Image 1 (tube, chains in turn brown, red):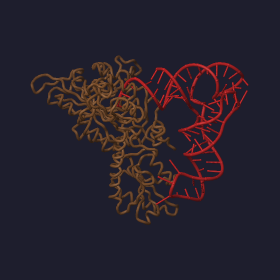
Image 2: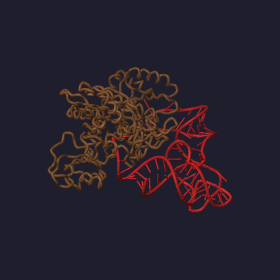
Image 3: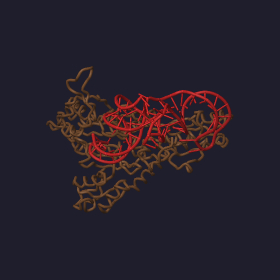
Image 4: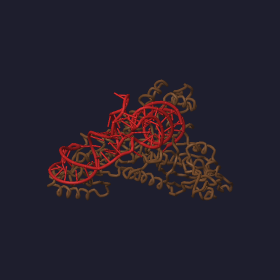
Length: 476
RNA sequence: CGGGAUGUAGCGCAGCUUGGUAGCGCGCCUGCUUUGGGAGCAGGAAGUCGUGGGUUCAAAUCCCGCCAUCCCGACCA
């Protein structure tokens, strides 16, 4: 069960963590993934937080089908051009060749907007604020568990609005109030927010907004996107409404999504040489109780454990009463699985009317303290909140230490190649300068920050007048 | 899809150069002893050597094709 060192071989470390923590494994069809019970419980916790925020901001859930007539995809030019290469096509069904092939959705704009054409007649039907939890399929060249799989799980929101201002506001609101909030508050991962450059935009979008998180190897992970689609899809699918002015108009669209990729981000943002490290708000088990006893003490210890468990109502908890492993083994296993807080209960603890608590977020030697049995009900929730906060703080410190503001192109490319991390510098908006950085350093513009500071006078690449600051990084 | 590497028991690997019928560690099963940081002893089960073909008396080993996985590129949530 020995894990490769994170610092020595990050990709091997990642893969071993995913597998030995029993989150997921590769399945039989190329690029597909089986999500195991522990990994799925984590995904369900993620879903719960995102779904709650989506509903709190006025959206309803729906479900559209996975199969879409191929001709529908062809109606929006940029969209089809962007997705066609990675679309899976169903050509046969019921033992016969289909008259019209069906595509397996790579995303659902097409079927949803073809349907919205029926649902939207008047400005009174707007805004239409819908979301679905679904699986999608994209035929990728290269896959990695959670980060990029042929089939993945996500939510996709699709909204329709009367005005462009309202749609833009929606796209930004989702980014900030749903995605940024969920990732920072639940995942304890700080994110950068901003616009994507034209080169990084979603096919068919006018503007793409994204949250970007920094992984512990210094690479960025696009963790959520929100698109302002203008009237492109409304026009392509013939969606019109009668406006307040009595005239006919096309509604303005947004779409937005987060996926099982977030699980990969969580692993890579918080994991360490001991394995996974889960924030209390998402951990399938927030607390694991490990009883410690000799044969003669077993009954007494287990009675103590039961009482302790009773006092922790409302906390997601696991009592590890397996007989086949000794305590030391269990300590290591639950640390690998990232459980935030472990309570060790043995005769010595019960004699002193305490339990020994060990925090996953601290180095092993500093992680232990004792909690009086009488204070468990108040102390454990407090500790969990403290762990959540300290995980966010250390992720933020890591990000700050890996955010650079170079003053020359040479310095920029050196950092991007060697140190990695986020690099913020002025940019002239010319795609050629963006392409040059990508060719020479592999780094792309992750975001153009949402509330830009005044850019420095000149583009760091070409020296011409800069329009704005850009944040570059190597990315997953 | 291009370049590189790797496929041998559930996991990690040795054996391949020099062909002779498969081994180690961990895990798994049984029993006893153990239990405050990855337990000990004894016994046991488990492998079409990725896959298809070829060479040979004989192939894990040599040759060819294919497949999968990982790394680097192109594509991407």
